[in-house]
Image (cartoon, rainbow, N blue to C red; front, top):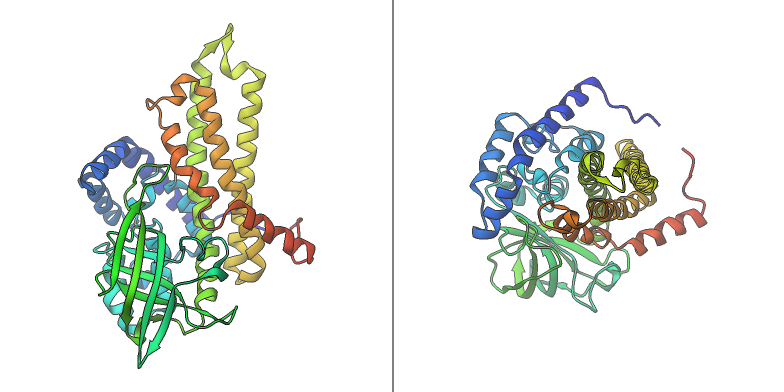
Length: 398
């Protein structure tokens, strides 16, 4: 496996790193404060225009849609640098859920759906949401529990159901909704594009969570009371919902992993700087073996996660999506745990300072803890890895 990137991509990655470190990180606190005060940020909007001017806007998209046509390996290279800031992906318009929803519309959207929503979404004139998770007993880690149902009525479809943790749905212009269209365990789900202002669509609330609201990451609860959509609102074909979800989720796990690795690396770099100057018990913290072990364990975990993610990305780029699935579960589980551990260790190395809001680790941790649940909890991904290994469908040495 060759994980090396070419000179052109390396130069592009360096440009993104410089943009993040020199333009975004110095004002990230201001962006968060403005967003929490008014739900908008002039500082963020200014940086987004700078990203456009620099040719770094929506780099994940094909060139004909305004992107850089990088492929999954290129996305991984850039997303890691964007992830050094919690607001970085939003500046380049590569944040979830819009990034994955753009890819879905490109892959499976009808001409009418693309014309109505794709262009405005790419230009960031509108936002979107992805609605699959439901309150118990509906779909969560087990998508076969899907309860939201779409029933044919003439040529139209009528959607009844209850969703929550639909990120950004409160302010979105459209939703991609997973609904049951038959009881077949493999082909019983379909995806529909639903206008946010559709009659019968109720925004119940934004669910308060462990971390404070961050830009579009507000978790909406929705009810669908006989919401009617036209036949061209179907993504792909009826019965392809589970298939499209998997095709969306495997690359999405990797883009999450790279963003999380970027934040973990930044936290470790900040810890390295602190322990090099802080003295305790007659010597620098960096000279204490317990601290060195903590640092080494975290560096090992970040590097391992990087290699896992790039290996899986290489498989996807070669068209081996089925083979990549258990490796994506392995990477997602490892990197999510790594992010939480690195942040916890950063708090520990900084002592009382780390527990304060004078440094960002406690706040980052509150946001990061969702990583071990989002896109499938650790336990489900471990089950996938164990299942495929038991069936001799994955190699541990590549």
